[in-house]
Length: 215
Image (cartoon, rainbow, N blue to C red):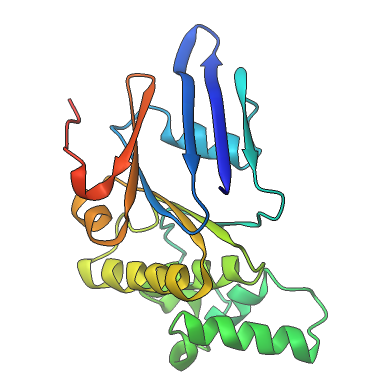
């Protein structure tokens, strides 16, 4: 088990976002975090990443966990000067040893960016930018990745390429995946489990059994 959540509750002033959430994520699992807007998915992610303190309850990662995070697509200005490679290197030590350079090369290759690594980030497509964010996250050698609406705003081909990469990372490197998304078909295709957050409660199950009930 990589994550154990017990009786987790979050309130802002008088508004209860969710109450007494209990779930576990297995090491190497691929889980979609689903639910309507405004149900607390982002709040839950912020708690798990240590950016918010829950009102009640607790969560515990396994002792060896290293979290990686890929954000929702953010449009980078077309004038943005850094190349894709330089952007990825922002997450590397300032002094680039041979080992660090090799690691950067490896992540660029792994995320299919080697042909365009010298292209300016501002000129890259949405899918290429998201893969650069993924490569950046991978430099920290995470064994768990949180994808926070990372495929939103991408065209279908870019979504498939990004999720194909995530599946590869899960199968080849045993990286645990938590994928926050509204895209049910994409989640059904690539994720094996789901967490469904709605009306302050959470439900967990197999993605193939998920019934969409976002009322």
